[in-house]
Length: 519
Image (cartoon, rainbow, N blue to C red; front, side):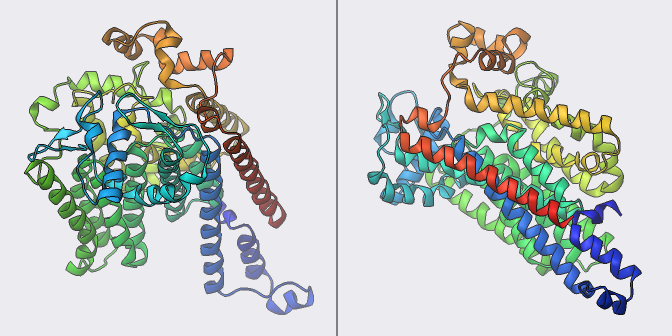
């Protein structure tokens, strides 16, 4: 029954209507009892309103903590593709990517191309077009590197905000996924907040890399799969296919998830005795197929093969011993996913309970996690480069976190609340340091030059763990905030980011007050 308490007024109304005649309700001047249909509508409205609040609050916080400038070659190449598509109607990169430290991959025609997934660049198109329209009217500092790449500008800022939007969307989709599994709106909101502010998602919302879009797309894919067998609305199959197809177009590794998700949907339809029709499966496969055709065409135009995306994958690409990659991604002081996201420990602790409640969904989540963990443990560059945390595992985080829902839904003793609260504080502190402290200045913090020796120390030596180093810098206060208004030297941005923080706090306060009053 505690699950129904989530719909606060609906739950109380149900109790009253079940124990009190309609005539008595009229005498006591109470509202008449709702029909089951009206109660269901109220629950749907509660979920919709909750999703809107989650999205708005998280997006406002992400705007207030945005850094929004380019650091890596990855973001420059994806941005270069967006620029080419909008400005020249082409997929080849311009001359800046033929020289310097950030070069595109040479195609069969001798021109240079991005070798990353096409989806992030396509999603950035409307942000780029908006930037082109408003950038001339914004006065912010512009930084151009020695190869002519804009690292900071009004246009770069607005394009980078694409990931703030997609990351906030990922958190909202996790909220909806938890609701589909019949968890309270309060529990679902806590999960969304943990994902948004207690994991690396917060850090990567400030950068223009492919992981946030991949994560949001995968959650959409899973949400559609879980929702369709329950109510039979085929739009869920379409949305699931769109999600998985987009994830594949962002990172080709996600093609491994097609059989895993297909097995789940076929099993669920059979278990629930729904007809397994070809049109239903076609609805799911059609968006995936469209994306695969786009990817194959994009690959062929660049490198002369539908299967070649630019990484030139082969046996030589997976040369790391499995035990090394697993230890590195799970337990090492430099890249442990649990060190960078302490809240995920809740998912491990609660997994057995989640398994008992949602066995087949648990198998689906495990399949997705293993489809990432094993290949990337074998990958020659399993650390994911000189980035914050195990970047390559970012899309698995919401699925580990979802397993924590039973624990959050059934905190029956104060000691449990203390443990969850302490873990929540610890995980948020880690993320705050990653957002405020400039992580690209790590070599200066440890007093060593960039080298393979430093990389090895950062991975395996606890004294050089980036989490430890950043926490020490944060506590000393010997750093300049790595926020957009500082990097862009813009008082206007400073005011805008401050207002976004205030507005987010106001929305949260009003929401809490509203639910407190209707309790």
